[in-house]
Image 1 (cartoon, rainbow over the protein chains, first blue to last red):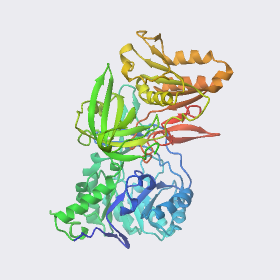
Image 2: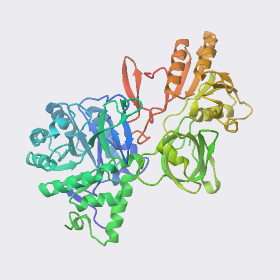
Image 3: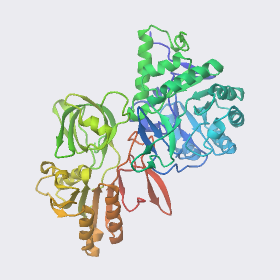
Length: 304
Length: 274
């Protein structure tokens, strides 16, 4: 019997728990040459702002031990072009997609949320309250429970779509921030975004990123992400989407085990364009092997 | 289909040998033959584990057919860091992951052009395939190859041959082979000697250190010659989704960041903000 891979994120039902993480999957269509993108639970597209954004000057990425730092600066095509050019093609491809959004001000968040919500094909809005690479790129809101509550409440009013709030790990107590998002009307929280890091060159005496600091991602951050997801799952009653260093089906299963309802795969897409589907296939193989009827019989079953 | 559609494939190393002082030549078997435009590249990895995490961008040096409908691809690379060092230690029979062919290669399609190919350092690995393609259609060219010293010039047996083989100018910074000096200076001097009409027919295809490309690009622009520059950059994905490898390009009055892996690696040198 084929295991039931479907998962619920509040009112939204996904065919499986594997999504792409924003910023690592372009606008989704870039992966169509590698596999049928409609197979994914959802595609979360690169962070969109109301107007196109040029991004940071070069010196945007640095490889680090088992990870990488990025300071892309949210370069993106803007909401209008996404609505006009990309969304119809994602629908045509049969893909389920969510839009990650950000703004420099609360008003910009509201504007982009409202504009994208006009897309009937859009499954959800994920609020980036945690980009470490742009001044006022969300971190100002994401850093405290008060900030996240304010931002979440305002975006909540601007959209009728399922609302996910993507949390920064660069905070004192992520569970409190998650609880604030829940209290302000979020339908789910996704975590973690990147950890702020830095790389310098001791010969040139210069930082390796033009932005000086950047966001650390990849397998290096997985233990931190897993701990935070576990903490947040114990604190909130809304679904939690686990993100951070997921490279394999086993990694994804670990996040589900500590209570995540779904996962997002990020940096792994860079190294293996088929990472998401391979993880999906691996989860299914695991459920078969363990003779489990579906994700629900495994999720949150951590033995303590 | 030319070029082949981008794909992510499992390959196997057939040969991986050092040549001369600093170069390696890696040959791999892939599931099917790969057609590529000179200048296109592949993302290559194969070492075990997560460290280094990311594949390495390598220009495709050559490709061909192999028995049973399979293909071969050849890369020539220089060890510059941990990834290429690990790659250089891999053996025949070991697996590779490859995404290829990637990016936009040289535009060799124009008639009536006079081609100069310029390779600085390991940059020859990108311009040799262009030379081979020109030779195949009997278009003449001249090639300028520069390195620090004699041992760092490409081995002779790698030089594209054939009847239409163009003239090759070697340059070493220490004078141990060919012209005594930088390839940049040799190209600029030769360019300065061209008539306006000759310069306007000239297309330079170049790959090498950024300073070399910049100086030649500025000279080419001032003389009205066309130049296509193959750029390098650190890349995470190689196929346009991470936006990490951008370069600033002039677009009318403004500048914009374009991806070396997708809109490049070959750019109109006159548009690059050097």
